[in-house]
Length: 215
Ligand code: AP5
View 1 (cartoon, rainbow, N blue to C red):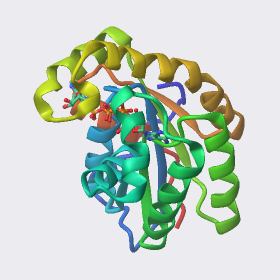
View 2: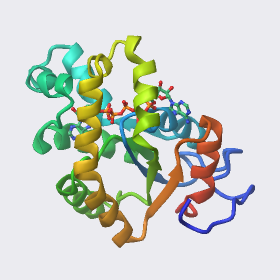
View 3: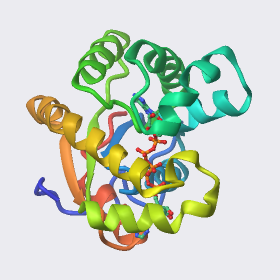
View 4: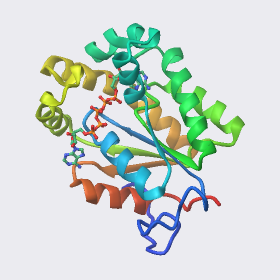
């Protein structure tokens, strides 16, 4: 991790669960390549910290599965591994994040994907007093990401089905991520963890790196 912080076993972020929706706010953004573990860590952290997991890709896939108007509009982008237009994704994500924040906090996974999304969402969230306290970057080599996604290929996700789409998702990721990392670094809230470690070790590294929760 790139921030020097000692794990505090009795602190608010402890995995013993002292931080709950009732006692403190938790607002975390998870960033990383396809396959870096955003969804995996998002689910675990949401349970540990007793807040909602909001995943932009999941919200979009639910719309595709339900054949909503929005789902039909974005289906092609998801299948190709292209980003969905900012205005479409921002609408559904901001609504879900606001609801989660009102209920105690959020672990936001898969958003932002562009610097424009990051800046616009941060400004709106800051106005509402629900801006993220930490942006956690799950750093992972492309080769490992490819292996993980290829291993998941029979899981039903259309964008895992072939290697050229996986490669395209990685290209899109690399074309956009550095300016997002620079943005969060400029705010002093960027934390980088080694996502190649086993799942439990990654979770521990994230929890140890988070700033003290606000009450
Ligand atoms: P999204 O759903 O966000 O997918 P993604 O970024 O491609 O990421 P994945 O879900 O594939 O990987 P992950 O990092 O969550 O890893 P996971 O935990 O699943 O986006 C899909 C699409 O939606 C985009 O391509 C785009 O079209 C659209 N979209 C979404 N958000 C958007 C936005 N903001 N703007 C525009 N468009 C947007 O793990 C992967 C595998 O690895 C699993 O099998 C897991 O079990 C395994 N694994 C996880 N961690 C570990 C570990 N530590 N060790 C070993 N295996 C592990």
